[in-house]
Image (cartoon, rainbow, N blue to C red):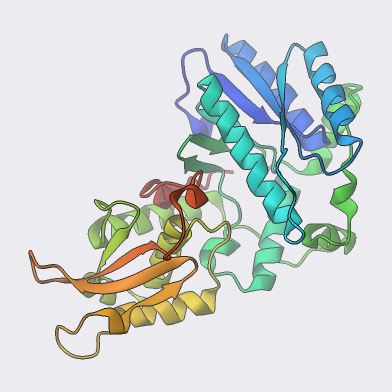
Length: 338
């Protein structure tokens, strides 16, 4: 927990618990950590209502946690379920419910149990999709959201260690059958047994890279606009191509409210477009384009006559569609500690 300091003097933290081995182990470890500091934890159990057994499993998990002195609250995803993209929709609903509960209880810190095996799988899947450097860096250990801080303290811990901890403690867990469902990409990857050689970026290198990108962002961007970001065209055009693409990737992911980074080749093409202006002082709707849920518009500022690309949500998107996504500029400071 040290990389995530500071905490309150008597910390209060929430933990997303599914009843599986990873989150159950995290809840027990976090409970011990908080109790040693005269704090407390609240376990949040999401019942997605996708299986008949789910409600009983959630109740069983809450009872197990109570036996260990951990308070728990069950959150139900009661909305209609989509016919396609079920796993993505369930994930979005889970985080929405978790952060809503944190807000109700006045809790700033939300812990989730992604661990080293999850990280390796994530990197492998992103490599397969052709993600750029940000995607191949894997999941961040700390992400700032509108309603709190999302913390992943187990990213360097393999699942085998967590399993051993529970076995030695005589604690049972619940295996979600969807983890082995071949309809889902992560389950198919696990069934293959051998992961590609891709590995997440080391923590120190990631922090250095994030700090450099943050400096570039502060020089190049103007955040003083409702629901949009202004990119100084001249300054952006002087960035090395790779840095420009990475900066643009962060902007459109945050403003567009997308869960995953934009594909590398699309970012490269768009960054080249932002760097190039055909003719001195030319700007207007003829150069506008869309990218990953955003509309990019080149405009001349009447105050200083400088060209700026305005990046805002694509027409027709409502603000609630991007609720819970990382804030700007906090998205540029995601911690890479492992």
